[in-house]
Structures are given as C-alpha cells and as structure tokens.
Image 1 (cartoon, rainbow, N blue to C red):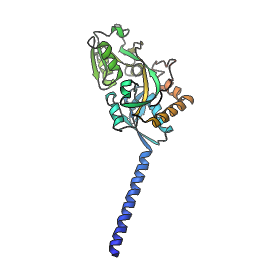
Image 2 (image 1 turned 30 degrees about the vertical axis):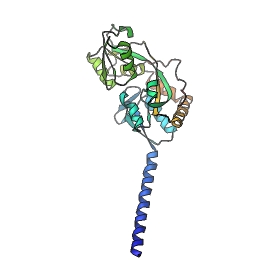
Image 3 (image 1 turned 180 degrees about the vertical axis):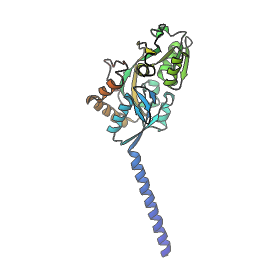
Image 4 (image 1 turned 120 degrees about the vertical axis):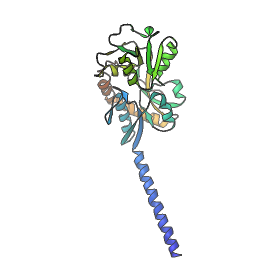
Length: 271
C-alpha cells in the first residue's frame, strides 16, 4: 500500500512539473507576436540581412510595443496569401501594404488605415511612350498576384494589354529592367521605393499619375474588435508623438512620395 501511495505521489509531482513547464512556455509565447510583412518592398517592408526595415516595419514595431509584446517574429506575407494567414492564425497582424477593400473585409478585419497611397506606373527611364494609364493598351504590364493593383488592371485593361502576374514585386522590377515587360504597376509608395534603390537609380522612373486610392490597413482576424481598437489607439499615439511623420519622412520622403492632405488618414470604425 505504501509503495502504491509513493508511486502516486511521484506521478502527481511529475504532472505538476509538466504543468509548470507548460505554463512557463505559454507565458513566453505571450511575449512574442508573429507579424506578416513584405520582404521585398524598399522603403516599406524589406529584409536586409537578418533585419527588416521600412515604414511598415516601423509602424509594426511601434504597435507591437504598445500592445505589450517584447519580441516580434516577422513572417513573409505574399499578397495572395494574406487572408489565409490571418484566418489560420499563422500571424496575428499583417502590415504589408495591405489595401482595405470590401471583398477582403468579408474574410478579415482591418485596423487603420495608417496611410493612403495610390496606384501608379513604373517604366524605364528612357521610355517616353507611357505618360499615364491611357497609354497602357498594347503594352506588356506586370503586377503581383492577389494584389488590388492586379485586379484594377484586369478590370480596366483586361484584353487590351498583356498582363503578367508575378508572385513578388522584385521579380516585376527585374523583368522591367531586362525589357521583358514595358510597365510595372502597383502603389506609388512601392514604385518610388524601387526607383530610389541604388541599383535602379537612373534606370527607372515613376510616371506620377495615380489612378486609385489605396488605404493601407493592419490586417487582423475577422471580428476581433478589441484588437482593432488597441491597434488604433497605438496608431493614434504614434501620430501624436511625431513618430509616424518621422518614419514617413525617413523612408518615403527620399523616394519622392508626397503624403498629401489625406495623410495621416482618419480610421475606420472597428467591426
């Protein structure tokens, strides 16, 4: 009987130790947040060695800090995968030039928007044949799968231009420089970032005629109103203490992007 009681006591102690270990692990996880970003957008979200930099990265870090997270694990969020990543809880938030649209709001929710951009065109510096979207018919276009830019081009120029969709923006730029395509189209924030890169400086130019309004929001799991309000509070603080403007000037100013009177934008109601 004594041996049986002793065995039960040892088993109970082992269970208690295991439970304590699980609690400790859970507590550690609470200090870390997984955030989806772009890895290949100069000035916005770009991987540089083992680090990440850009306006989206600054905003993500500020918000995460305000929400009480000690550590961030950045995860690449391709345009076509963002809704799935949030729905399956692979990431908690996405800061990745993520335009707020009614179609996307059927699957996920958004905090913000935290900046407003517009779709534009990127061409080779010596190309004078494209001065605006009216010159696109007959041209070889490039955009990224799953982006609002690609959808806009399909809706407006489907059948009139040769649209090629790549999985990353950097592949579009490489094709443009190589002459495989004539025009790359996406948000002006992204285009100015690439045009200002040292390797492309003098080789590319932004046409400078926007033809859409892209409202970048923070993607979160659908219906998480509490998190949405917390993020908006953090964004408000970032704007009020000047860090939002400081980051925008640092990353977007040198590229030639003009914030305009619509920035910083008013937030949508969380739902």
